[in-house]
Amino acid sequence: MLEKARAMQQQLTDWRREFHMHPELGFQEIRTAAKVAEILEQIGYRVRRGVGRTGVVAEFGNGKPVVAIRADMDALPLQESNQVPYASQNPGVMHACGHDSHMAMALGAAALLSRVKISGTVRFLFQPSEEVADDEGLSGAQRMIQDGVMDGVELVIALHVEPTTPSGAIRIESGPVSGGVDSWFGEIIGIGGHGAHPHQSIDPFYLTAHVILALNGIVSRRLDPFDPAVVSIGSLHGGFTENVIPERVKITGTLRYTEKRVQEQIHAEIRRAFEIARTLGGNYNLIFQIGTPPMINSPKASDFIESVAVDLLGRQNVLPWKNELGAEDFGCFMELATGAMFALGTGSERFQRQLHNPDFDLDESCLPVGAALLAETVLRFFRENKYQRHWNNIRKFI
Ligand SMILES: [Zn+2]
Ligand SMILES: [Zn+2]
Image (cartoon, rainbow, N blue to C red; front, side):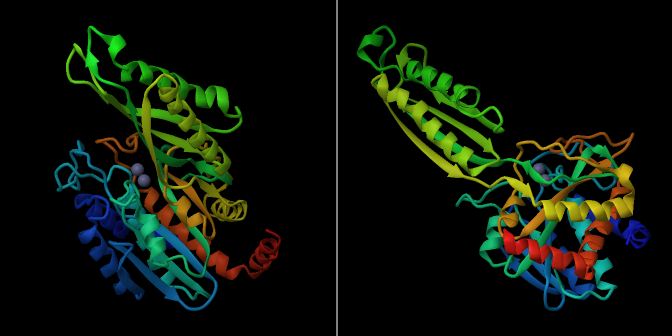
């Protein structure tokens, strides 16, 4: 597959640059989705449009097992600073998270798999809006799942570009590789008054100061030090002028975790921190917006990808993946089927760029590597009956 994918280098580059030049924000991927659907139809896939609002689902092959490959399609609200012929033509919008290349590589894998005989069904999930949730708090993966894209799926895989790793190498790890994320929105309520008469008011700043201290004590004083977690404050707003004590202060933030029990504990502790406002004579409002779950690579799926990668790229190019608490909604798919994501190296001497930055770019020699690894993993999953029997036996015990 790697040789065949390398022969597709020009095509993969063209696809990636085409998407890069015309980036679209989450749930607005109209042009992008149309292009993806058109290419998939041309290479013989059965295509469904408008899935999960602006997503595309495409299938090839028949019967069981069903293996899904996911690619995200959305760009970011950023002005590109690169002076390249394929720079974004859409002002203020840029593919700075590499989703343009995710699409190109998934299309490459689709093309590679369409040329071989497969004993099962491969289903490509081109999802909208990985970066942001819609007005009901749901991201693209959750919308796709609502539309049934995971029905019957036994294995789901994906990749994400990783600019600090050289092109030609990948990173894979079992267990948690990214954090679950929830947002919280709070309001500390006191009694407003004259700045010269604090005793006649209940100063919400004073209450908030105590709440902030308690919030910052959650991870350091309340959680088990072996449970990775974050509680961060992202905004704090209150007051109008220097000599008026306002009635309320608004405070919002995010939290990260890798295990459900820790998520529940953090929620309880944040509530407890806000209770201090009541203890000191004020009141509060607090709302949690549940985000996406942590991304937990199944040991079976990550071991499988790792073995394929070692064969394709050599042991020296298959590296461990350091987990972190950034968010990635691929975790939603992995709650419904065995799955894993791997990180694809996209860096080189020339391209040492960070994700979500206006100068993000990648070494396009990584494109065949990603496409080949996706396709080869699916192919071997179908072919290796031995592995599958083994996997089914294990599943019985879970
Ligand atoms: Zn991103
Ligand atoms: Zn991303």
